[in-house]
Length: 254
Image 1 (cartoon, helix red, strand yellow):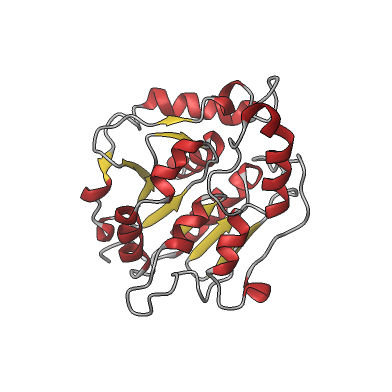
Image 2: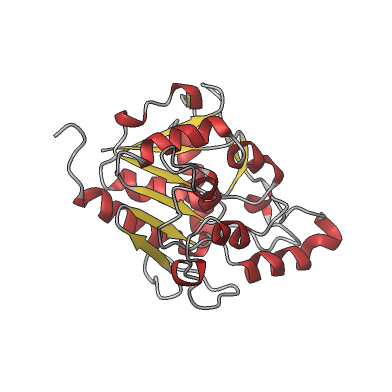
């Protein structure tokens, strides 16, 4: 099957892009990347490759290794433009996150939201992780003018985790961890009809992450054709659950 992963030109999260690509590719699926302008070679947030502060708080070694394989694979060398996206040509859609300033290009694009809205209406698998859930929160259903998430159960980057990262680093990095004026959780909850019932935070996490071999620390939420996750520590379980959903759906055109 063909899965679309739209990206900003730079600053997306290493793990949230590389791990789903790795799992989907190994399952035999085709992953297509899209940037605002066709042919742009996107670049991940460099701090996540070297360490956000004092060599820490970056991506784990396995995720960095997968990302380097992705870069060498040529997967980024032939991106399609957002305006060229034909939603009906894809079987699945993944919206990754990232917290550095370059993500605003991705999170605030009305053009991209329009394409996402059309894909959402097809009732095909959609996955969103961390800040990527904001794209769905901001995407409107043309019939109701409400968010496409209005009636869905979801998770996203928890407010306590976003606040902690910001307070730990703001003295040195300023608003590096504040991509948007509002916390991600606050904006996502505001898009829901019954946020106290629909929003799922999961267990409190501080640093432990799920891995390919052990997903006990990870958390995802599935609601029909939609899968969401909180942060890079959920990426392996998120990608696995999305792949399961993809495999359970009819092949496009059948």
